[in-house]
Amino acid sequence: MPRYKAVVFDIDGTIVKHISSWRYIHERLKLWDALACRYQELFLAGKISYKKFCDLDASHWKGLPDRRLRRLFRSAAYAKNAKKCIGRLKDMGFKLIAVSTGLQYMGERVKEELRFDYVVYNKLLSRSGVLTGKVMINISHGGKARILRKILRRLRLKPGEVISVGDSAGDIPLAQLSGYSIAFNSSDRRYSRIVDYDCKTGDFKEVFDKIVSVAGL
Image 1: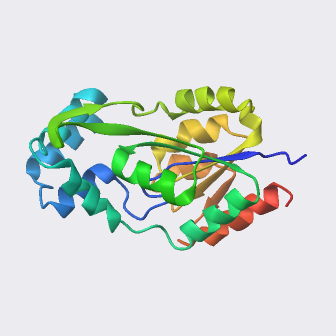
Image 2 (image 1 turned 180 degrees about the vertical axis):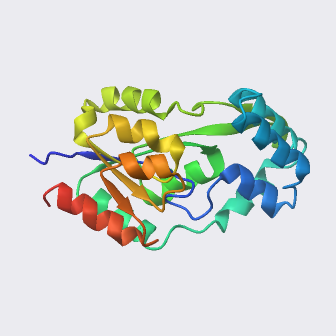
């Protein structure tokens, strides 16, 4: 029986190239303005809550057709070799889990195209196909471990049977909970220091090879 039975991934900056689906929308719609930057600064400085930060960000897109944002994410690029390598992990029998503080558009695409077993993400709300400017927070900043524990209970898996893959400080809780942790193009020094393996090539094949190696396959 293999020691590791599941792999949990972050999405933004890990499976896909863009580091934030929130910022991806702003930039594609040319709305990454001084105000959006200011919201981010206020949150990082601890002056507003994560929920408030998300609400302010989502308010930029109030009134836009939901389908317009879905179209934007159809062209979002996967990391080099990520799609092929994750497909091979699925075929090898690993349960695939993704937990992301990003938005539904990429989360839904990952679930469908890469055959993930569980994908949890935050969601922009719409009414009659039009964005309301509100957001449903399913994963808060720093809350990925709590969500993963719930998923593992459903799958009847132990944290030690999971390998985690992420890219930022938000993935530290995953690294601390999982049995083995991998950073892929880490943007955070602390995260790079605490993971079991720090991948820096930009090629997902290195992540795949490490997973196969530690799983003894």
